[in-house]
Amino acid sequence: MNFSYPIGLLALAGLIIPLIIHLWNVKQGKTLKIGSIALLGESSRASSKSFKINDWFLLLLRCLLIILTTFILAQPFIKKKLEDKNSGWILVEKSKFQKAFTDNRAIIDSLTKLGYEIHDFDAGFSTINLKDTISNDTTERNSLSYTSLLNQLNYVIPPGKTVYLFAENHLNKFGDKLPEISYKLKWKPLNQTDTLSSWITDYAGKKYEAKSNPSGTFYTTINNEIRPIKISVYETPGNSDKKFLIAALNAIASFSGRQLEINPTGIADVGFWLSDKPVSAVFKSEIDTNGTLFQYKNGKVISETSFINLDGQKVLSNKRIESPTALDKIWTDGFGNTVLARENSANLTVYEFYGRLNPQWNQLVWNEMFVKALMPIVLRNDKIKDFGFENNKDDQRRFAQNQREVIQTNKTSSIINTNHTKSVNYVFWIIAFIILVIERILSFRKKNKVYAKN
Image (cartoon, rainbow, N blue to C red):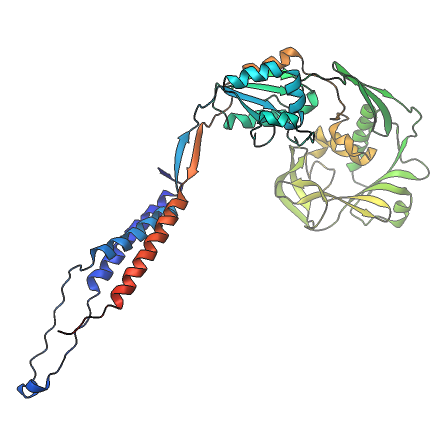
């Protein structure tokens, strides 16, 4: 037996408490005067105490209560190794079990006769019975990637076990990395009838038709006549932030293929206000309805070394403007403070920047993430943050055979926990309650005991 908090055993020192109570619980005697010898006078009073334990059973019960309380505080548990009760597992999504069983009945029947258990390929890996093959429940509940599920299986099944996986081999079912497993995985792809699909998507203001098959997904432009994006930039005279912004805008135009017009005549789609002054009404009026405004926020300058979080990367920061807490945060620093916030105001999407596009404030303008971070603002498309790479449910691309082998042969990379812990705290609670009831009954009876006169 092990303890989650062994320091709780120090409470065993409290065992001395019931012992002291029993040794010092000496009742004072009563003097009884008898009339026939009242004239003989009173003898000198004498008293004596005997440090003798008269009720060993009651003392034992009270000591046991303290011991049990100590064990409860230490939170005991037992550790067991995962038992090897079966030959292996069969994994299949419950919603696809009927189809998997129909197409692979001979294999599944032979494996179950060998002792293989059938489990749902979903969080929790619940057990599936063969009677579930007649179920018409085709609701897909699997929200986790195959990579996540196969990694979780490392902590459920003993290493070296054989697992048969009946699942689709779509690329979009996996995350960014292949799983690292400690068991023997035998992947049996399900038969799939839909091998061609198409859909319409948009990126950087352009519409594309996507056509997907098992070998790849291909995009073709639907509309080629796209007007340029007009961008107005205002900078306080004497500053040099504008040149860094212009360089980033040129990089965005080159990557996206969109034409960007800087400080054009007429109404602009996006406005950049690079000044400590409040945005002028004239500058706002020159931005199109439902356009975008990026503005510097003015306030107390806080000098502290931190970093700006941009899509998982850290960009060094030296200064920032003090910002409110209740904001729609887009960028934050290492302390969770707002660096870039977004709000909708007067038919504009306003981005409030609590910093400056200046190397004296941060290293943002020198970082490759600067261009990527500006793309959703300039092109006004949330998909820009992924640089156009989408994970579409209709994507038909498949894993190649050699890619599946990588998963099967990588069996020792994970740290495997083959032990199972079970709390036994409830046992001590039950025993302590029973002993407390017995101790109270005995104490009450002893207190109310009446001695008869001789």
